[in-house]
Image (cartoon, helix red, strand yellow):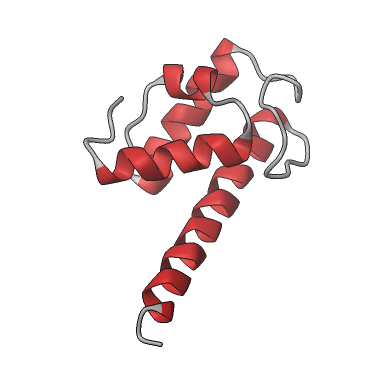
Length: 92
């Protein structure tokens, strides 16, 4: 039972991260966002991607290259990749 609490905390942290990044996407794109949405299908383009990356760095303290958003344009995939990068050097 002691293993459930850390897993639950990690899941909650992941959910909070997804919510924070969804909020950034919504602000940049001006549309509602769900975790299954594709950044480009919502109207995102390279300038908006740069705005998202800057906001992620400013608000969440995560340095990520625009390429990561270009390669992982679905919100759930992007946040999962950010979580992976957070466990490594965070600048890929």
